Length: 215
Ligand code: AMP
Image 1 (cartoon, protein in one colour):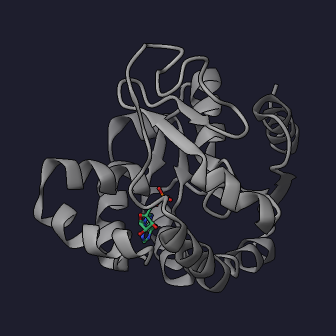
Image 2 (tube, rainbow, N blue to C red):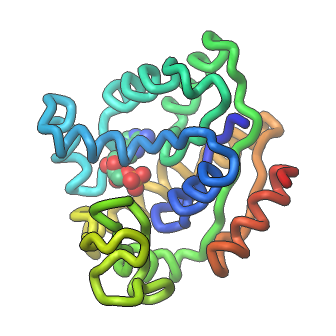
């Protein structure tokens, strides 16, 4: 199973990726998560990326490509992978094609999770993540039982610092201009599948499995 998850910020790609990992045991490669880890570690790459992320802009292609290349060559990706948040523009998509050709690991499918623009804002401003286990919540749609506390592990929840209204607007604009055209790119290759990302997490997961012919 080699998949790209495509969709606007807030479409629920990360949540669906986590469901796929739980069920099928293949690794998720989220460039956003890798960049946030680099920032937390204070690496040179993290310091460079931080300024772009804070503004809601894309981090330069060569930075992200280097990270993805390194990650895809690791042993656990031999059984498959879920790319989440990558590629985000045509140059990245073309570079991914070249890399996967070189590695002999062609993509099986590109799954687009489609959510109306009006809902995305609420999804993003309401999003909270557990500091301990990474479980995600939404104060509007799927709140934790106790405010700011994870139901699964009891750790505190945090709001990503690029989930502010101003940065969110910028990220959605960047998505429309740079990432949405990838739909056509992958449609032309005949591997694009689309599912509606409106509804409960489990409803969407059922659609994802059906679209991918998974049990
Ligand atoms: P995400 O967690 O996928 O929403 O990504 C958060 C931020 O990380 C984005 O707004 C970008 O600044 C940066 N980022 C993540 N993935 C990429 C990528 N493939 N290319 C460029 N920037 C990225």
